[in-house]
Length: 314
Length: 273
Image (cartoon, rainbow over all chains, first blue to last red):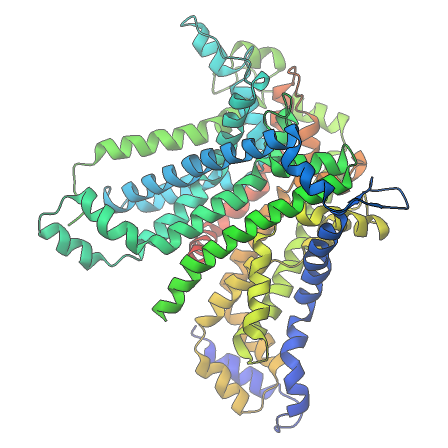
């Protein structure tokens, strides 16, 4: 910040052109700055959303020159096809597990670090964050090594106690748990830091006053801290679901490919499978549109609680 | 005070968590220097008794490592420069101008963060295929060159610059592009570094979209190459896969070691609304 003045001087001295402001061009100027990002988002985000919606009314295989209009058939299929129903149910299981592993547990740990351990926050932040730097493919490889039923370290360790690691890839439920644990390994530190930062913004004096009045610590946290930190918490909660459902794609594709019998698949992976493995573009587009609507609802929850709170504060 | 001194129990719990998340990585590094035989028989021996570079040499024979590293680097670099560049320009527009529809445009931008990749992947795949960019890292990078997260973070950083600074420059008749280039960008350096570092690391690790675009092995990035070494039927040669994973984690770790403080600050501020 020290070189502010010299920066201005440099800017002043290097200015060319007249001092008069150019009004007509000035009005278009902000749009010029917005142009690159707006163009990219339009071409690769907004138009594709519309086109996916359009494709969801057709039967197509991604290659054929003609598309067959089928009306709402793909949407009916989303909710009536037994595989799709299984996948939707799996998605709900994923959401519950992701919220427990990637939101509730990091929140609990961030409360401990913020309120129970004094001034040692720095090293924990730095170390917890490290797996966030690594690819989920690395995580998937590490977990399939650790949990390898034949030669993995856990299997060798348990063998001494006469126990075995189950063939977890043969069970949809167990595979889902392992896949969620892999994303937990990656995002735990990230979510922990977001939540800890939120807690750091809770005014200290309120807490100290409450503690002086002899109110037990956990009640202070429950009645004062958690409500005050609601904005950040809901943001991380929504992020956990939105990002988590996309994060699990990688370990699913690397380890189970959605199996056994779609047992570990979810809405997003099933969309990919329909689009690029089974070439059922219409089905995939309907699934993608349903996912989009679910995420949109989550976005509105986020706005209602988080952005709304910001405006109140302003 | 809410904090007290008798808290060893909590420290032990936290240290156990650190061990749980870090030990797999430590053993991964250690096992990458063991032969398949040794890794099987002394799986939890931290220091290999006969450290060998064999896995790394085998990797280099089986795949074109240098090419994959440069593919990954090129892709991550294009994505990072794109996201930082478009993000800075857009943030400046939102922060320094009043224009019609600003609120709405900003809302649409931020809402794109919530769009699941499956909703856009089919049309984007068709566009990239039509542009003849399949099996090309540019095809991976192009659709990702704008990220609303970056715009939000840069706006937050720009809010900290005293408005008197840009206002007085405007009064002096300095054109916006000079204010942007000579005042804003130099002052934003820490945030450009940290946001850029985060974007680079994320792109370096990216897996989902590249699997759709890059089918030809010679165009693979490192995560795709690693996936090829993990067999879903068991029988993965783990020391070999671990050697590749070690190569993958070194650049992000180095970036983190140098810019750790900046990166954590940016992550923190992304959550604070």
